[in-house]
Image (cartoon, rainbow, N blue to C red; front, top):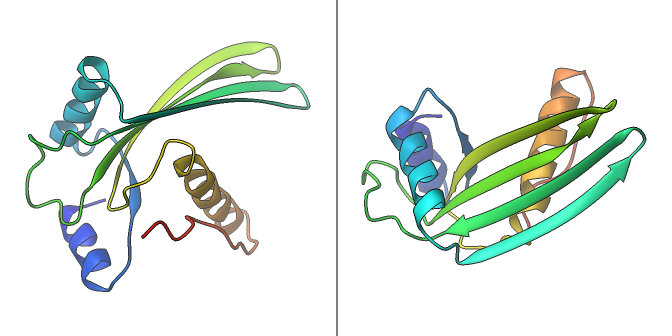
Length: 137
């Protein structure tokens, strides 16, 4: 995701919650640093068991945007999602960082993030989907 895309989304009157990956190293490091040093404004933990899989998700929302480059149009929240669990009896841990133009709580963000993953999975596997973030404005 690029700064240009964020600007296009905001200028069209929409909001975003975008995964930040290693292709945005400065932003990615900043979010990880904030998550390690600052207290989140909101935190939500949920555990889920489905078939042979256990997952605990910890979602934290941060509002410290002091070091964020102003080119990231509309950014209002930094989100960290840690997924810890087992899949077919093998342990895993995954941490994903997000930026968002939405001011929401850690309890609200998982719904939209998982809805987005569902859309991507259905598109990838040839289906249709409806989902996403509730209107938090």
